[in-house]
Amino acid sequence: MNSESSIRIAIHGASGRMGLEVLKAANARSDCAVAAALVRAASPWVGEALAGALGAGAPDLDFVSTLDPDTPVDAIVDFSTPDALATPLAMALERRVALICGTTGLKQTQIDALKDAAGRIPVLWSANFSLGIALLKRMAAMAALQLGPEFEVEILEVHHRHKRDAPSGTALALGRAIADARREAFEDIARFSHFGSSEPRRRGDIGFAVMRAADVVGEHTVMFASEGERLELTHRANSRSIFASGAVRSAVWLANQPPGWYDITDVLS
Ligand SMILES: NC(=O)c1ccc[n+]([C@@H]2O[C@H](COP(=O)([O-])OP(=O)(O)OC[C@H]3O[C@@H](n4cnc5c(N)ncnc54)[C@H](OP(=O)(O)O)[C@@H]3O)[C@@H](O)[C@H]2O)c1
Image 1 (tube, protein in one colour):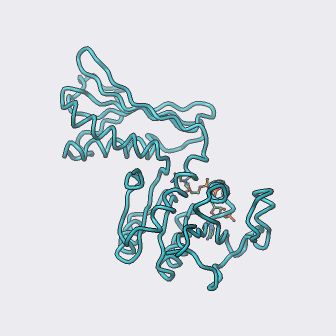
Image 2: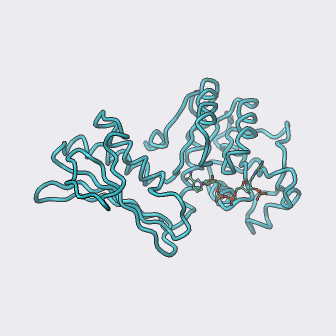
Image 3: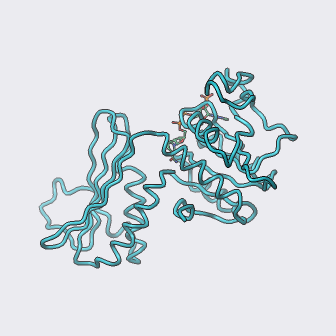
């Protein structure tokens, strides 16, 4: 951990859409600093100045393909691809620093490797680094418990036309948080479509609905409905930058935690 107040962050996958947002978010905070911007060895970005991507106020650094052993680092943030995960994981273990991973599509063996590393370093993997969604997860679990079984739960998500998976990983995570709070098996109560079914709705099910349209960044609504009243908790993402700022805030927090496997909701104070 850094002895001064500023957390030094290395970003792996730095030339990607998220990587660039993380660079900007880290550069904008006064309690952290960009220590390294890591890209593939064959990347055309190697040797390019960060100022070219970030503009005025960028740290005086170049994109690099390896972490210089003399560069001090307190946390590594990864937004790359599942195939590249071994690199930031090995780096974090070698340096004994926090690993914040936002890469999605990881295999179970890769999640297991992250959990194994959590015995030695602090690790936070999340498919959604929005702190608003983190709070929604917590609120939805609390609402499900406090409203009780007479309130039926439906989760609606809306995303841009390019999204391929449905329902979104975040909608599934919200459903799992509710099932966990109720101590039920998510697989037994998740209901992914009402289409083509003439069966009435089963009482304890969690229903999912999906819409795809234009450029919607991401919208999730958890609805609790009983006879006569309805509570709807909605989160709307307007920009991808929220995932980057959530990841950087997580990095600043995680760099000061002991080794362990953390959840994004742990970052909320
Ligand atoms: N958790 C969240 O909140 C959240 C939010 C948004 C996105 N994501 C996830 O974050 C990941 C990145 O998304 P993105 O939109 O930024 O994708 P992207 O624009 O395709 O960026 C991926 C980056 O990873 C780099 N990369 C690939 N192989 C690498 C290697 N071996 N070593 C170092 N860098 C390597 C790529 O470099 P090249 O271009 O040179 O190949 C590229 O810069 C995805 O898994 C996405 O689903 C998570």
